[in-house]
Image 1 (cartoon, rainbow, N blue to C red):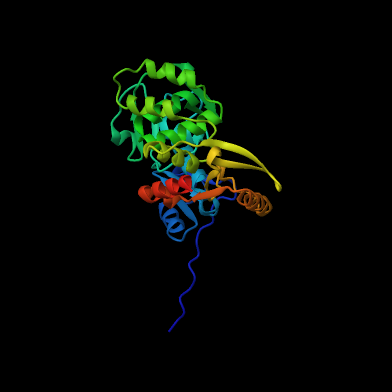
Image 2: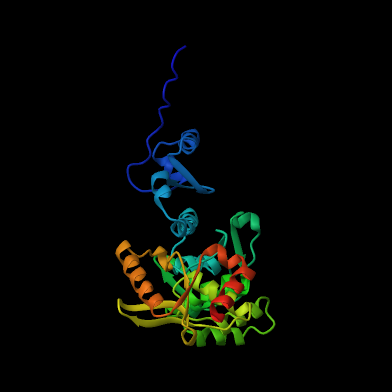
Length: 312
């Protein structure tokens, strides 16, 4: 039996990583060659008419991939800073590098009119709520809604927990809460205004991760005694900052898996020092309640653990 010969694939362009179909054609790759490169994992189709080098795509994290899809849309439509539309909602949030939790990768645009969904594409959603140039900033070469307008639009479209995660992070990055409250005052009766006002009421820039935000939201929703966030406590092993603490009870609540915004992960040495300080706090009579992502969705068990620790 004759051994199967390896498939000889056409070469990708030597420069660049993101191409429109026409650009690949200009480099001598016809539709059949493009299909073969996709089939054999050398090229990834991001959306209709736009492709990326697979090596680059595979090494990117989830948040970076989500932004890459927006860049692919811009590249495919030749968007520039003078474009007729503005990236908005969760697309703008991603371009502002806000943490977006449990949200799809649809592209959101503010448009001056109402084009058909067929024209926009299946992965694009158009919005027509009026905007002014004060609502727009330029990030790179892309026109994007301002940080405050982005958060307001997202909070009115998303669920409360998703909106709260995003708003906490925006406030931490410097978003002006008074500006967002003024925007809310100008939208009485609008769809989603309740979620926006609720997020504004409960937002806290001291949250350092989505996990901390969701932990705080769950404490509020379960009517549990609220702890103080980001509490510094001195120990024999140095100062320790607790995610949450009921200081008078000497109970600490820590969200495990310390992934901070922007995929930050502490080094092994930092984790070791934290563990030493935690041991010192335990010797001083502190009780620790450790929460993981899965615990946030086992609400009654979470409530029992917190109340049990506070009773002790």
